[in-house]
Amino acid sequence: MVRLFNTLTRQVDAFTPLNPPSVGLYTCGPTVYNYVHLGNLRTYLFEDVLRRVLEAGGFAVKHVMNITDVGHLTSDADTGEDKVESQARKEHKDAYELARFYTQAFVHDLDALNIQRPHVMVKATSTIDLQIDLIKRLEQNGFAYLASDGVYFDTSRFPNYGRLGGQRKQDKKAGARVAVNPQKRNQNDFALWKFSKPADKRQMEWPSPWGAGFPGWHIECSAMSMHELGEQFDVHTGGVDHIPIHHENEIAQSEAATGKHPFVKYWLHGEFLVLPEKRMGKSEGNFVTLSELPKRAIHPLAFRYLVLQTHYRSKLTFSWQALEAAHQGLLNLWLTIDTQPATPKIGCAEFEQRFRDSLDNDLDTPQALAIMHEMLKSDYPWSAKLQSLEVFDRVLGIGLGNQAVRQHFPPLDDSQSAAIESLVQEREVARQQKKWDRADELRQQINQALAPFHRALQDTPTGPAIKPRFRH
Image (tube, rainbow, N blue to C red):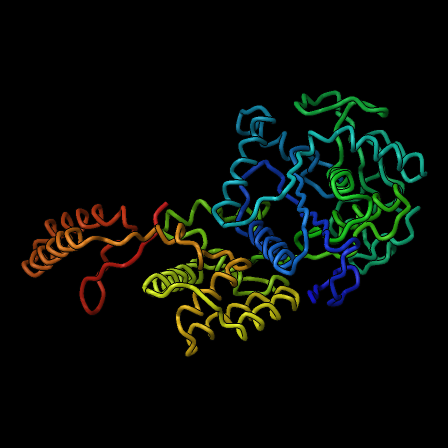
């Protein structure tokens, strides 16, 4: 049985969906005003493992993700600029064009990391009517009020506000994370709809019963998820930073509108990827994107491999040294597998069971990887190991059973090897004669010849060697 840590109950709960074997899974997607960074991608990787584990367990998962292309302001206090509008002005682009560009870049990163695309990916701008209808329901139920700058949710009417994060309303201090907004009746109230300011020249705004404007960030997720998965569904995920505000607000507005409790049965949250000094983030100005990996000859799946080595509920400290080590470890694993002449058949049953048990225990990927490496060192024949690796990779997703991934390292034929070896020997002679310019020319020539095979010449303590090197 799958067991998952539920933020709502603060314990590891047995997973029993509302309508088995169907599972409704909603994952908070990106705000598409910039490239996602490795910290964001760590969250999407944990969610991908979750989906793969559930599917491997026989559940039929419907995976829905939002694309926030409007309404996410630069402040959690419902003040400041809309991130998409603001960035569009900086880049001198149409806001819709900007959102499409960064959405495509996000999907490209998902594919590069072997993250399964959601079954449904919905843009906030395509569901404005749904969001307005949901605000109307809240207004009819007495949970919404009008202020001069928009429509707000009245948290004083929702007695359980704060339970996801384990906080009472009176313990949530205004100004601790957000500035005090005099427009609000209560310090924790949040915007459902924001009015366009007369002085603003917004590209994204819509008419509403309350005035022209745009939706608040939180309302989109409730509207989209309930439209696609029903007013109650199984699993909602995101980063830990979403717990105290965004997900708390989702619960309040959803349950206030429908009267159904709970809105979501299981809430799962992934921890931060951090730098030695602080967390990685766009607001911190220190984020690293996936596109930087190939520039350092690091395969994107090395980041996936690195992430799997730390439990999703533990902080992961990022360094290039750790990522390069993961890259080399993954290359060694691929090359070891590729050198085996055996045909996969009849896997290692005991290791497959232990592997499954570790993942069923709140997605314990570090333990699952340890079991995989233990199997590789075992006395089982390679035919059995290869079969089990294919089973493992249905969850790990690091190319253990996919020859297409390892085609980054196609073999050299005899004539190619002989020609390159001749160049290597010529370079060694040039080095011995201290003809450094000629040695550098030969090194460049050798690496150009090796580039299609994703290999490069490296000087080692024991002499020159040809090593696998991935380049995008």
